[in-house]
Length: 204
Length: 269
Image 1 (spheres, each protein chain N blue to C red):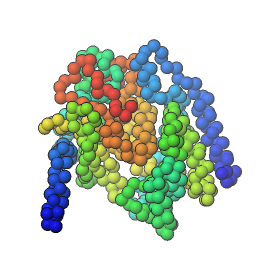
Image 2: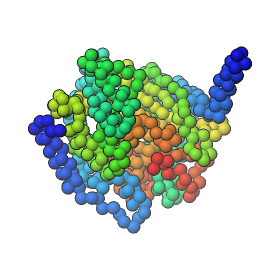
Image 3: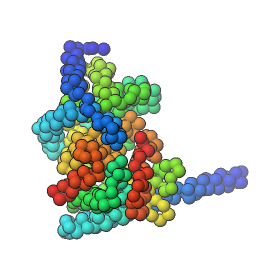
Image 4: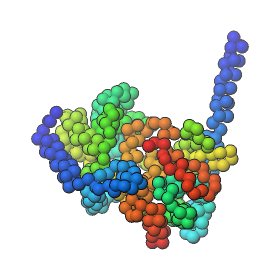
């Protein structure tokens, strides 16, 4: 009887251990999001820093934490292929600027709302060279409402990058891509027409 | 299932509006010859776009003049403690419809949950959320049609009712006739429920909508994309495989190399 108990115990201990090894990128991705969120709250929400400084800090975190170029290329859609190198370079830098301008200032509005990371699941596509994890989190905007935020984190060895953010099931990358597609299809159908729009957005 | 004259009147009203949109919108000319333009046109799946944009413009105006002020008032002046029962009441009033459609979709689990939430909330006059830890079940005729294999069809911007598709519009009209709440309590209740739901929902995203309007390059296209994603998630009941539910984006460690475009196709398509 004691042997059976020992075997059962051994099995129970062994199974999660092997599973954890196979899915170690998930835990690491969860930690990655947790740390990034703490860093963002730490360095961006201080109300005494200037808007300029906040944008600089945000840009740093954005570059560190997100696959900026991969996302930019995805949202440019089919127009990326035909664009020249110069256009691509300008587009990438404009894309980053617009994101920074849109998001950085929002962190000044933060006033201690709770942000909670609640684990992740594997979302690696078949035949993928990188691991992908979906990290689930909640942001509590008030007592009666919260926003579900899902982070799609790609990783390879020690490198972790966010490749998409989903708010209440809505993918930011997909939305941006659909919107850019509509803009481009109405004005010239080239990346340069999108560049023009983005420039107006950044400078305007 | 017509239970009153007003049902029929409302039905005629919706049909007339839908027809107006369909007729006034001569299908947008797609540029032939250019495969990229063709692909973009097909992907947008919005042949009535010129008319849709017009209706959208009118809807945005109605929103700014009526819905948003009401929603802001509700958000700021209505006591927080009372918002929860109001939300519950509206959600619970949708459960009979959800029950019916879960059955039609063959989803016994969700049908059971819809029935359970309705009957356990009855003693509290539908004011309580008896399953606070779970997302409420919400099913409608549009989702049932999707489960049955009907294609979504082109995007349609309905006057006042907002973003829709051919399939979802047929669903909206169907719901009006098969909704148990409408049959038992009359269409006034379902219209009131819809109005209340609109205010409560709108009150939660005042800032987000403002932000989207301010930051989007093409507000109409952004809303179209949001609608489609939300609808697809509802049809899947938030399930679906995590792999399918996101775009494929490479880690992209290096600078972009010319001619490389593998990351452009989302897995969902």
